[in-house]
Image 1 (cartoon, rainbow, N blue to C red):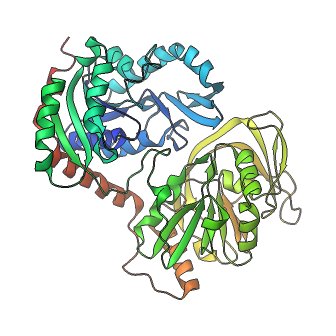
Image 2 (cartoon, helix red, strand yellow; image 1 turned 90 degrees about the vertical axis):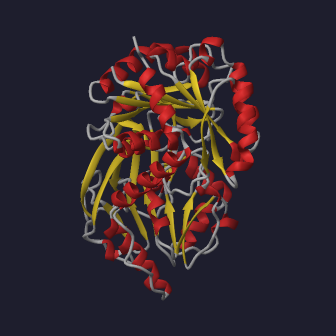
Image 3 (cartoon, rainbow, N blue to C red; image 1 turned 180 degrees about the horizontal axis):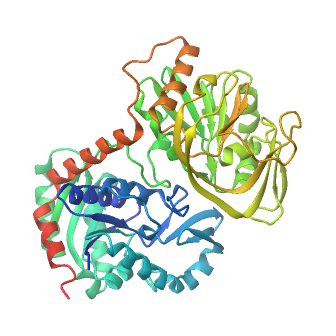
Length: 496
């Protein structure tokens, strides 16, 4: 049996995902074979494994930190919110269907065999499994038939680190209140408390830590500082959406209500001259140098949202002067029509933005695959992207076909990687700009159009850069966590 340790939080956004990734990195550096596990994740940021199966993006990130390939057994259940109180349920990497919150809550215990099977599969190759919980274990209305927090800890006999977020305030009430609401057998599983996102002089916190240990009866395993890291975070609580700085090169990403896989654009944060803004109104849009239309879990609903608030008209007008680039759902929106005969999203048919000569028919079969190669020959202002290597993945529901008869017969789907010209471009490939050549080429195009020079030698390859971030995360956690205590918790875990 692999040794296990579980990271639970007092709330969503307490920092569970990063702490899980950091522990995976430390264990890897220390010569072990760690792996992350999250039985159920709710996220619109997802990843496609080598086998063409879908998992949460956070588990893919944690697998990278652990130095292992992302696998579907690391996240057997993925919930992707598709509308009001409704989610797409993905089990073992494949779409099971859509369920309301009430339907899923009543049905989810049927997935326990899948969770146990995935965990056993992970044990075959890992000697330490770092489990991430979800939300809080003290949500008393959700504790019945829990499969992701204390219910899972009991299922796999895992000791728990409980993490609180001091940056939001009230961390002592968070931690002590959570312990108070746990059952006695659940409290016994909590072997250490962690105060996360601390800013300032650590010694000022010492009296509070002593009182926390006294009142909680559980040792504090560390005080982790607020970390300035550019790693992927929870899509619903990311701080990236709040950044509004406008730099010499201004890139705007349209933030729809159901935006997905916005991690496609994180790479641009490496370039000092580029500001990346997420905008949700015409007033915020202003006059950027490039607009990205990102992925969406509800292409038709988000296109209607853009139409209602004036963003569609504003983007179309700006496309006369600047490039507009759609990826996945954004690409589908840019076509002439999106149809939904099977009611996958909202049913019916909807006029598209009319910026690309394509049409999309949504279907129940989801396209999932990893892909790599070079970007095809492009025309227009982004022609310098031609020939740049890429490595990414596709994940979408629907077939997109050409509607122009000049270059291909209607209905043909043999598209290039990037389709378009003039100022309108689209692609189904997530991670298209993760290779240094592609992001440098695009930044160079925008810099030349603005008449400025980029400093430095350009961004690092995305994979190399992320490796440096994981090492930095591990260094911070080694300095702030009591790793001797954590290894002690591991040694005592699952003694039977």
